[in-house]
Image (cartoon, rainbow, N blue to C red; front, side):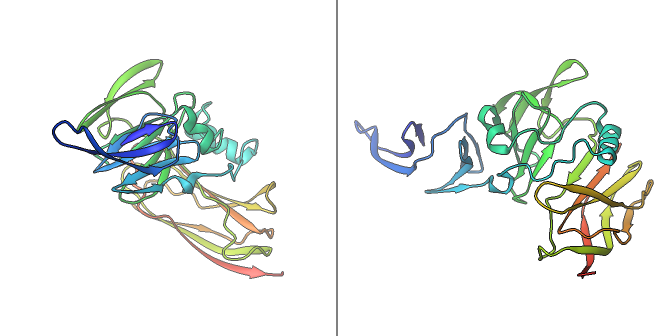
Length: 278
């Protein structure tokens, strides 16, 4: 493949004195960074998002994390206390939208965990895409440089005022977990109250305290704190029960936080009974 100012083209290599037999346009997206590859596909960033070329087809794979930052919980006393407990003075919540983030980002592949790493050194977090799960997530670390020597990818990362060289997929250490859901209206934009919710998790290791916060969104701007879940210490199978919320809201935002030494979060299920109009 050839990336040009006119888009992406596929070259069919000729034989003998014919170096290139055929040039075929793939799409008209302009690359804005360095591409990478995984399992026969080529992945590259553009001003519209991250695309992957599979054979002769091109697919946008980053649309799940596009758009404005939907949930801004900063300057909320309850959330700020949780965020400080997990990360101290550092702030790993999204500071810009994804399209802005990738303009100066680097791409690399973690072959061990089969993940795409998207990292912009200007921000303290990275985006992760699972090739098998097709799920995007974030990591509260930012890489400074990648070096690919298939099947190994090396990276430099700044920790405790020093720069470490690590092999992706074999890094040591444990990171706090902070999950913030997108606003959910449970199939309706009407005002509603949560009568009961259960957050079911399967956790291994010494996790410390688990915190679940529920926020209500009355409109596109405002968020109000509704309730928090039961904190559980060092349990392998955890049901966090959230009682009836005191106020009605159109959308609900779930915040899950844990400062682990070891953590495996297999499931995060939410069962909700709604009540409309009263």
